[in-house]
Length: 297
Image 1 (cartoon, rainbow, N blue to C red):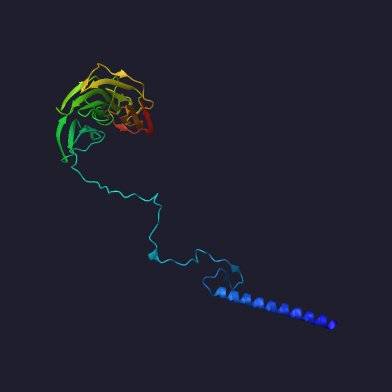
Image 2 (tube, one colour):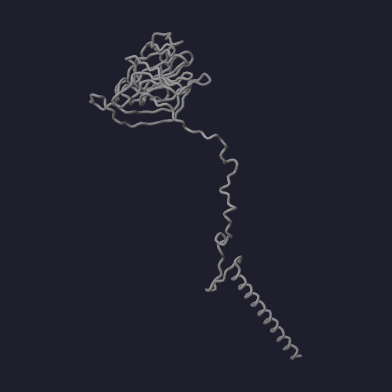
């Protein structure tokens, strides 16, 4: 009976040894196959350390021919549109800065403006969109401003209001005029209560409205709002009427009428000023603030 137990014990040891040798053989075979295969997920290093491979580094390279570029969702893709190109047109007769312009049908009326900082224009040039030509030059009234004008049209008559008189940073004038574009005749209108630089100007409900701009020192924003009744180039009142002041003043505000409401858009606070004591009113830079406010009545 003792011999039987000893025999069984030896048999068990033999089985475990055999299983162990078989396991080592399988592991060695697996490691050898892994080290010789490029698709392996394990790598056996000489230092006997096992590391995971970099999936991006080991990723098979794609054929460049299969890559068509970045693919965007249709939501973000550019919509097909005609290619718009600039075309050079007939040059203006004179260089201009800070003038004013009004389009009536196929004609563009261009007024005044700086030729240089020391020279201003005092005439009107007309551009014809139909035949791409300039012509029909005529003079402005001698009292009319040369830059920073307020200007608007009803489709025939052009109303010209206040602005800077002279070059550099000279003072403004309160004179106002109306031009009949069919006869090229000028008529004067009542002057503004006080002169302004570049006020917002618009026709609304049968009245000519003038708002904001810069005060006489050229830098301080003005809030005043005046109006006067006009019809077919004629002034129906003898003086300007005070209106509700504009919430935020300053020059260079866009002004439009839409759905019987008057809009003032954007603008500027502050501007160049005449250097104190300068006999030629030499321009001196000051701080300027450009804003995006929109106000409506």
